[in-house]
Length: 360
Ligand code: IPM
Ligand code: MG
Image (cartoon, rainbow, N blue to C red; front, side):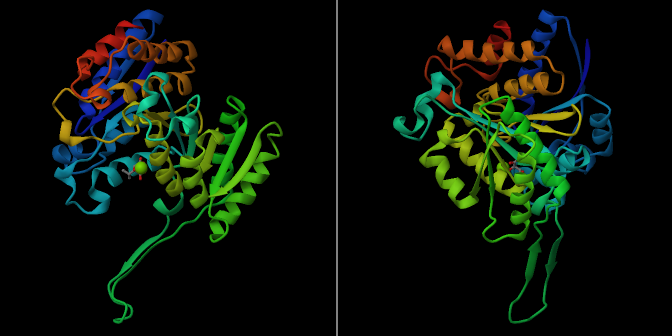
């Protein structure tokens, strides 16, 4: 089979880590007789430098006409002085999410057995390990609501600015369905996180999620306020299976969840639209401080490619193969510098990609 993938390498370590993920996909292609056609496009800082725009129209068009997008990371200090919508993060990332209709962001926070000591939590809290899936709404809420800034309404108050959190039943239902569908394939538990003791939008969220839950009688639904959820994640993270939440709460809780696994350089993500289209990227950023040193960990991007095979292409065996190859790399005692510093088992970005590709 032929699969068309738009590749956005991005900034900082982006090009290095995406190159390794492509190498692993090529190995999968050889073994299973698939052809992955890669079309490289610009977005983020690299696009600003080349075209003046963080998200050129041709990148959006190429992405829309492909089956999936593989993204490294965008942004860096070079572009930090630009105004909000011209910056790589807002212009390119939020632009791609909105333009491509990527409303469902899946962020697994799982612990790798071999990396159990990397978690900052105590062994008795971690127990047998962690496997949480955060389902974050990605194209609505406060990120995309009305925004405003006024210089002087009342001279006493000075400047005023606001951002509106707004959700419709349609937006809540579709993200809730993704969460329940995922839970059906996992441990059949959904925790919906909101702030329904204060926010109108959260009251509608909670009521709508409860409504969707009726279609999934086998799945247990819990509701938590976001402050409590933040606490429970460090107090007893093993109570969670799938967490579903709004754009901003998901942004915050997914960083917290990734950190408690201790392996932030290892975690992939998928952003899905209706149908099978998706954009796949590591959850970490562009790490400009280590760009070009060959020390970046490509595993999160390699695992993002595995998610692409699983969710967009329906290639379960091939996806399992990549995940097993990563486990073999770790089981053989190899590590990346983010996990072990300069220890002898440390492998460079390219060596890590070569080894994982060799285990396919
Ligand atoms: C993320 C990032 C982005 C977000 C930023 C870079 C705009 O933090 O993907 O979690 O807030 O969504
Ligand atoms: Mg974030």
